[in-house]
Length: 311
Length: 256
Image (cartoon, rainbow over the protein chains, first blue to last red):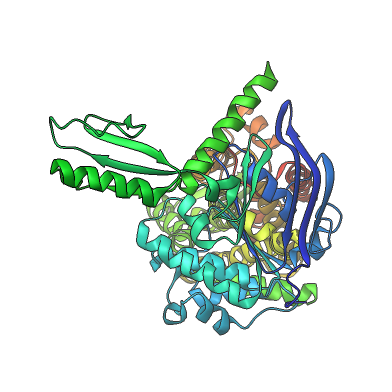
């Protein structure tokens, strides 16, 4: 089963969910395969958490078909709970228990738990095993969250915004732990609103906006990102007129940019010009659209189309 | 894994966490004894008339009512405040995402609270016996006393679960709990003996709520007053009411 990469872990068809008049999810179709780290990106209020909580069995759907590990979460919540691990946004746990005790307690809820010491090694908390939870740093508590989610040796792990509110080094700590899960063959579903997080961790991702999936793909090619034009950027010293042969756009005072189809040729022309007039292009750089650029464009579109529909 | 093993495990961890939390362990244990010492020191060497022709030493009175108070605080206060904190911090929601049945989780909390209550009553009674020579329930009154103790402990647990349904967040928990229980403790003669001069409207209010009936039932074992099974029935009715409310309105997720 582990080696079969094409096996489906989660399958969703026509999923809808409303809270009163507010349509939180407006028809979601998605397939997540076994063994992949899948990121669900979207702004706050886009429906990420609602979607994931339906998959986890916390909420019931209004319409559509959902199977998670072959189980319908609405019909067999208990069967599902024994096979998934959930890391919620909040990191609440009993502060007075020790790290190993905490994992052991959660292990005791499952039919086939993974040994506690093995879990602690996976998340790098072996040295903290006898420390009380209240003495852990934010990053360590988050790793303990992951440890608790691994207690039942689940096939599938949900991580809801695992690094929101963390400083950069704590984020790194958590990222490394999540990356290591790949080696165990676990399927990981991660929600986030950080582009770098999705880029660093995810095999595939989907962008959700206004209750719909607006793009799906891998971080490199999402929404044709790889085919988008590169931008050449540079600035000139005071009083130097820009070269005339480019379709330059003035970005700021002395800063210019140009969309480039032939980057090598354009850079050659630009630097030749600069050497000719004796100008040093100190901050010359070439930017590809980042995942963030793509994401902002996608989610902005989602917002405008939603506004239209509401009218 | 069977339910009994699961419950046993759960109790083990609830117990560990309880004793290691200095605030909850200390105050739960210290308050009833501290009040006992304060009240008996201030008012000791008096006797009070609890019914025509029946006079008891005030220290015996306070041993009995502080035992009742200990049960209320171990069950009602601790469960309500503890659960509100756990709900707010996401512990309850996390638990909800694991395969432990909710009934086992709740039962673990409940049994532990009753266990703490029983220890507290034993300590209070022993303390009273040693230092104030207060009498202890024996024979058939011991049986009646134990019935009241367990019915009362379960009821105040159940009411603790019920009150968390109206507690908006963890910060508000102590305020809501104290506002709901302190006036009743005073109205019901837990802190200040209710004498024949008490206004009847006050007695009327006290008679509606379970605290007065529970206290009377607990007192009877120590003071030799008549045990009234109606007190047990009224307390139990409140317990059932609390159970109905909590099974309908209890939430595992933080309120927003």
